[in-house]
Length: 117
Image (cartoon, rainbow, N blue to C red):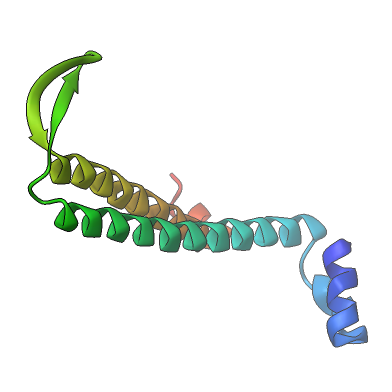
């Protein structure tokens, strides 16, 4: 009802036709899908920028050496750039997962029912 009220403020009386051939539950489900999709798209953009920053810093510190760690103990020396790039790859993996979520919430429920066994 809050969405309908806000829409009525923006476009007027025609907002009353929002529920034509659709229940409020369907509208809430659609709104949730749109919200999740928009949020995921925002996170993808932020993670992509963050990964780019890590890649840039890796290029900047290409020759820097740091101690590697295993089980909270120092291990063999590693390049700081490699350490940063490991995080960049983790961010890219998270981006792929979010893009999969975007694809999933972009399908209508009817298409999902058609594919269900």
